[in-house]
Image (cartoon, rainbow, N blue to C red):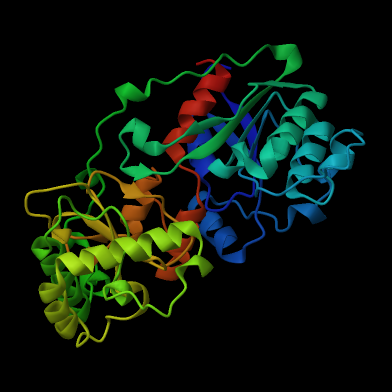
Length: 393
């Protein structure tokens, strides 16, 4: 398909990552669907199209004919009954079935599907086998293995591996093999998507609190003061920075947890005087409890390690510090990464840029919804690249 007008439908549309990509290639959206009312409103605000709701309630005959079907469908387990009665039997009860029944009815020229990385190995490979075999049965050529790709391969500073499935109707030809040399990954810099603080309305709303600043200062003192051959690659659990309890049977824990407990104990023994003093001060910080009393340093070694020079997240497993080249994958929660040098969270506009949405995109006025929607979105530039490959343009 050359860059000429074509029609597409947008299933599980979210806020329209597929829409942005397809329109940029000359596409016209003739139908969209998403079960989430807030996503439907954002979609309508940006594209002037009101998506339909639950796709499972919509008959295929009520969907306009189209050239391309786009879908970021949820990943679900499929039947292992072994009857091999085809997609109608094995995919029934999953949302992928709705993709299949629409493909079966309309027979569009192409389909482009996106899913989480886990789909490649999900259910010991059964999920991918059912998807692959079902699409072939419906009359489509696709690559034998799912393609796993991340925006940071294109220089977009977000590590977000996702599965992309390109399908072409068998009468139109084959999908060319997709190759990508990871040795030629574009360098990433978070500066390419950051807003200047003075252009952020109500920037104070994104600032971390004074108590959080003090807590990070405490953790900075910790990593800069402990004596060790290198910074701990294991999680630092402050409730385990102590002598081992002779009455505690460590064998009750999984091997990985036993290992972490012993490593924290060794770190404590080597730095007992400093850690005892540090813990007394740390315990006075009102935020020093639970996950914030744990640290995962994943930013490599440095002569003078400094959390404020990196990016970090508040996770259930602890404060995770990563090198400031690219962000971890956006997820559908409010808690985004903290930019150390700015002492603030990512803004919704910066999240939009991480997903390659243009600055003209109007995101939800409720920050919690905006973060959730971008966390669930498909990356626009990645879709453009795979669509071009699929269309052979």
